[in-house]
Image (cartoon, rainbow, N blue to C red):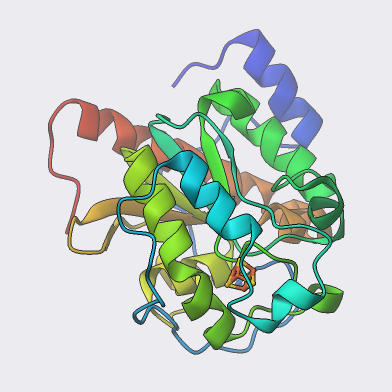
Length: 245
Ligand code: SF4
């Protein structure tokens, strides 16, 4: 593929070599917002579920007032999501961190800046895509989300996905991917494949969390390969091809 000079400059800033091979991504260790690599109990089960039919405004209000799990007592504010409500691409991370909790927007800290740069390298502004998290409230100390917290928050995310109706979802990091797909498979096995989400079988791809890439800059190339893979899959969907297994 060719990359224009502006995107090449973003990639250069990321430390990503633009002359990457078009192979499927290789296998690499798992990642996430935290350093733990322990398997997460899959938590895709039924959510409390009173969001059916809510519009954006009502859903946002429901989240802002939510006290379903204990995280409501330690949050500064909920972190709903940001971006185009009709985006073709949706990016889903794990949970707000300290900066997100302070600002009320997902992916705004250092990891968020890296995600923004990677989106730019793909030719997107943040406003072109929709960005949300599995959890809408920050786990204290940035610990991993607990399965019951993910279960409680699940239908908010599901309604966001319904409302956006993206062509493609990219799960960011191991914990987001495992929660979204209801699996305990390691990230290394989830990357490089198209997964089907829910009864609608919406295509989901998986890549590294930018917080992991900040700790392991040598893996940025693989993350870039994931995004190129995602772009290729998106193009195939646009052409009407079936990309699902
Ligand atoms: S994390 Fe989700 S379920 Fe828990 S209080 Fe926040 S919005 Fe509600």
